[in-house]
Image (spheres, one colour):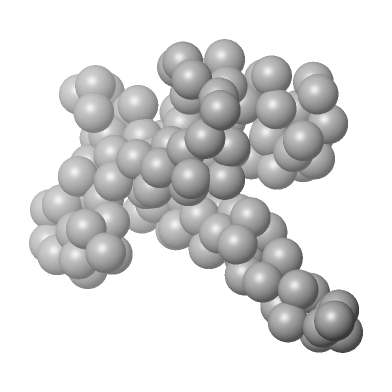
Length: 111
């Protein structure tokens, strides 16, 4: 929610980029609570162990870099990069949470 509010506010692209990165980090902590450490290492491990598809891992690294630019780069973040980060976060949240819940709701209940 913070990322979305900042994305829509004038001159808040850096804050939004940082919050999209935080959203990714928090989503992975929720989905893989046993995994600790820095986001970059965690992503690499999850892809290496095939717990995340390589395409998701690659895109997640891009969001991580966009968020890092928002936090550290003096030139800031472009609107295009910000929209890419938003699109990815929407996708990864569906992959990690929405799709598994939808699949589970369609399975027959075992007695």
